[in-house]
Length: 238
Image (cartoon, rainbow, N blue to C red; front, top):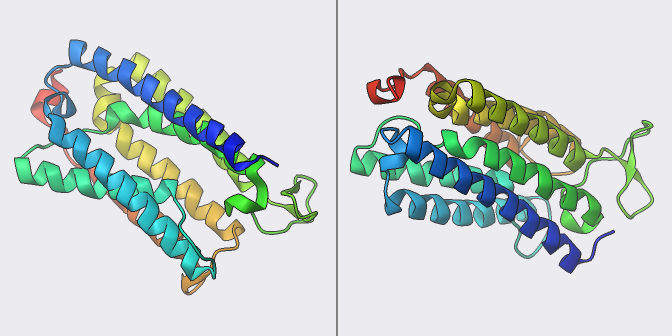
């Protein structure tokens, strides 16, 4: 099992991978598609994104920990994503910005999650992202001698494949991916997390569903609504 310091290394690696890819894609997008919404968003967009992700991460992560009988403070990738989306959408409404601003961040987010979840798996029980016990051959010992569902590794694999698919889409159809890519990412992430939440020892808050189930449902709904919205004219012609 990883020590807290070693786990931090994976966290840093995840951030560097996501930020590095995002910076490269943002620069390329501004050069090729300067009319797209997030190329015109300004500093307020980035500040809203950062503030929302930090608040959402600790708010929902800690709430889930307490609801599950734990103590202290916790973080959540799903919570960070939900907080960032809410903050950015409020900012966009305030400044009158329309269209998707997250397409260029979809692949970096998926890549960052894929890397970070490896650290979660190696951290074992202490990370509180482990799965429930299983008698299947793929069960992993998370440090307590009990074979468990390797939920973090499953999520890492799904997100790695998602990142690869989004980058291929960006290469072949950049205008389409930048307009729809974030919505597709939200749908994929929301659906895979919704399924995996049934394999985690979190306390239910509504029937069989835990807090993260509800966030996943909201994320899926958000992605579906975004996919149904017409592409703004400046995006379609970019």
